[in-house]
Amino acid sequence: MHQPDPAGRPPTPDPRRHQRLFFALLPDASTREAMARGVDTQLGAGISGRRTAPALYHLTLSYLGEFDNAPALLVDAACRAAATVCVPAFDLRLSRLGSFRQGRGWLWWLGPDATPPGLQALWQVLDAALLGARIRRPPDTAFRPHVTVLRGCDRAPPADTLVDIVWLVREFALVSSQAGAYRSHGRWPLGDGRRAVR
Image (cartoon, rainbow, N blue to C red; front, side):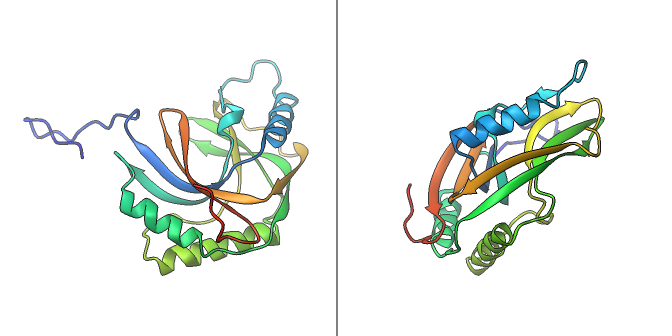
């Protein structure tokens, strides 16, 4: 943990040290390429912002928090909870390029028009497993499925911006991110969540 300085001021977090721990869907290489092409076709001249590297594309299922180092006990408990999840594989159609207001700019994302039943089932079953394992999560746990593709943009995309990307979702993962890199703590295939790859 960070210690306050002698003057009693709160510590300044070092973003290079902090880890964010979350369950996510991670697209395969061909899906990542399709996402990147979909974004490229919509980025006109003069649009500012920081592109998300395609290798970092993900759809968050459940955010477990931010830590100096993700506690091993939490990681193990989360993996055990994930191993109880058993839902069918499904296809996810990304059909919209939308945005959220973020500070002074806009965050752009790819997402579905509506949460498909397969994705909703995965989120609900995983959420129940985490609750059953008494894993506490940050208070804002509303499910808003999206893949962030651009941050700090000076405008929102047009409201009618459409894409058509079919993502074959066959597994989910527990991931920690730190300094712009991901580490996988486990992957669970859909249809039989008891066969983990760690």
